[in-house]
Length: 189
Image (cartoon, rainbow, N blue to C red):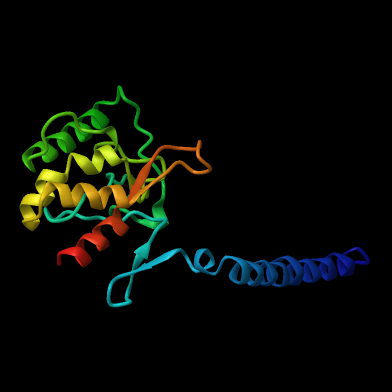
């Protein structure tokens, strides 16, 4: 019985400390130092409405938009509660069938030539908001036709939204699809 009282007291103290005070302090510091990131890196449209986050991919399927990477999240695409890849390897028949169906859908949409892997393979999280510049460029003819825009204007928009490697050497150049599509809507609704 004499060990129970200090154990319960320590439980209460550490619950308050680790479950209340510490998270409140860290959240307060984050909101002061990184306010945009602490609030989810939200993106707003031209009217000021929050339409998404720079950190989580969103589905775009209409021909007048650039399409993102496929999502492998369960239940529905780009489900942030179910983040995770399919874990299917390149020899898995179901995976090969899925990739084949994605390639066919892109071909049916008019995409010609080599198809970048990020248009047919989901990322490890299933929520990647970025595509490669190559994945955006192969979509130019489709988007240009659907919007009645010139390929040159779309190429310039892609170039303007291409993010460089982090710190100059980490990762690959990439484009946030939501930001690109919002800019596209602003340029030509």
